[in-house]
Length: 102
Image (cartoon, rainbow, N blue to C red; front, side, top):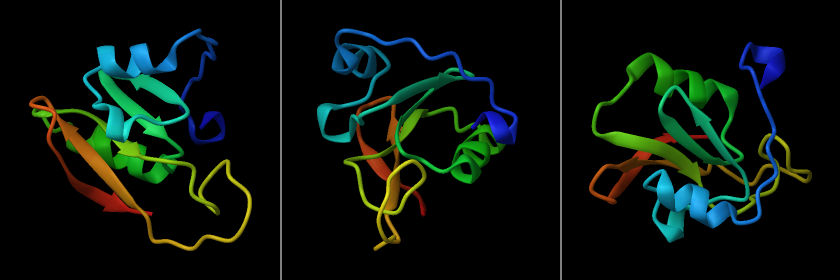
């Protein structure tokens, strides 16, 4: 992320689920990492290109995006990429729709 111009300040926390829940991310879409950026939560191993797409579009009804689980081959995960994997937009009402594929 830093190589692509996104400042990162890593803060280990005791309960990542509480951070995700507080940001409006339902349990089924919570990831192993949470990034809070410009008012959005980014959950899991979402590519920088999709994060940049979120920041360009700035959907008003979305609290964040999520790539649930830890699929192989995505940024930060080893192994072959068996995707494409769906990245979900999490709306303020808790519902989710596919935002992009990576």
